[in-house]
Image 1 (tube, rainbow, N blue to C red):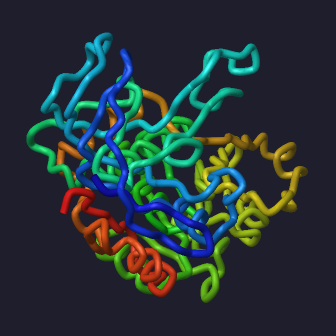
Image 2 (image 1 turned 30 degrees about the vertical axis):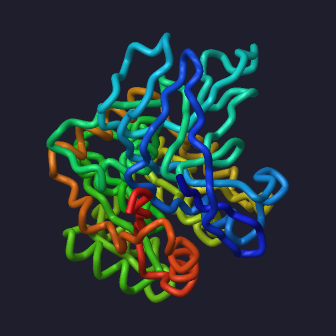
Length: 339
């Protein structure tokens, strides 16, 4: 069996990895496809080396086939096609308030423990979600980011008929826009990459480039002066954080999806008071978000296949990360872990 080990310094090396027999509550998987996440790219750039502890196998946007199960596993059987929810919850803590996906002892599989860029992967049984036979394993690798989008939209309490701005047209921003459309919202996406703007226009989304256009004026025109009911901040840019309070109607909602890990951002708190605005955090996903994502993917209304920029073999993983750095137009890159 082979795996792609991240060694630090923007370097992956293919090496041997021994299949790990599952414990009582675990399953061993033959990984089919694993998508490259923005977090994986951050790891590749070296900003998480202390947490990762190279050399380590990373990756978490995976589809797989169950090859072995522990004695206590009842939710899947050998041969099942699954998508993985890569969260290990750990011991409950009073801080969690029943939310283990953001709990004190949460560990993210593929970051805090070995991930899916390998042929055989052993994970807790509860992380497996069944894929319908009508959904390909390639699209099954997009369930994890789609579940992120479903969770974000659910946290935002978006209703049919509302007008919404998504700030950032990368993979998660695009998926949020599609989920919002499925909920019956009218959607505008703000993005600075011209190639991505053209893709969004092809999918019949309203778009705005905040570098070349006045964002407030365009949002006002989009809503006939009412401004939007919700803003999803997915870009992670300081300019977006500064401008987002200018775009909302009374009692509008900001859903913070981007990490903004580079320190505090200036936000106009007076506008929260004046218009009774809300700021809502959204991180990861819960079980129901995975089930919704699978149902949406299987329904076929979201053109997931068109989001896939490239599918490459495990042995080509180094070149994939180099290509991502060189191609800001791309959306989703998949690694075929069995090829």
